[in-house]
Amino acid sequence: MEQLWAPWRMEFIERPNPDAEGCIFCDLPAAGDDRKHFILHRGKLAFIMLNGYPYNNGHLLIAPFAHTGMLSGLAAADQAELMALTDLGCRALDAACHPQGYNIGMNVGRVAGAGIPGHIHVHIVPRWSGDTNFMTVLGETRVLPEALAASFDRLKRAVDEIAGSR
Image (cartoon, rainbow, N blue to C red; front, side):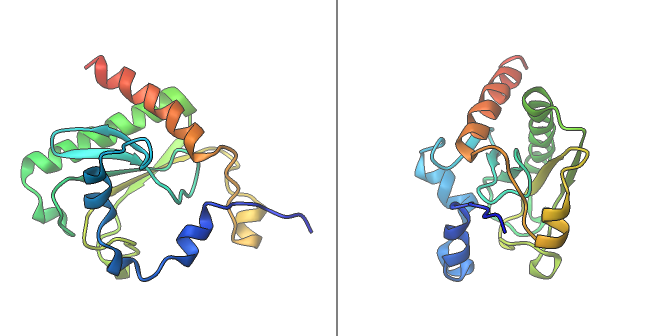
């Protein structure tokens, strides 16, 4: 049997109850170290970050700065920027990673799969033909071919270039 090494998963596995830890979508932007926390872009009302526990390389999260668990809890301007940054994220992924498709969505509420139910956010999961293989189906394990820091660097360049051209 071959070994699969994914050391960044240990932090996720060993963390205590995530509800007791605060909110990453509030705490990480407030920390101010965007590279350390994989924050790719800050808008006025929302931001784009790389998911630290991705389903695929380039898995992005777009979240408003406003802390709410429901889309209806956001003002129209927050909702508009959330969608504009979703578009920016897709365009950056197109430029940097050339995916063949996307899964884009929100899990609203814990029973719907929200890992952080108190703060709404959009997932953008880039997809490629064949990215789900026997490891995912039989081993319930995903193989990510690129380190998070390398994905961040590549996507940061693309986001900055696209956002700067607007």
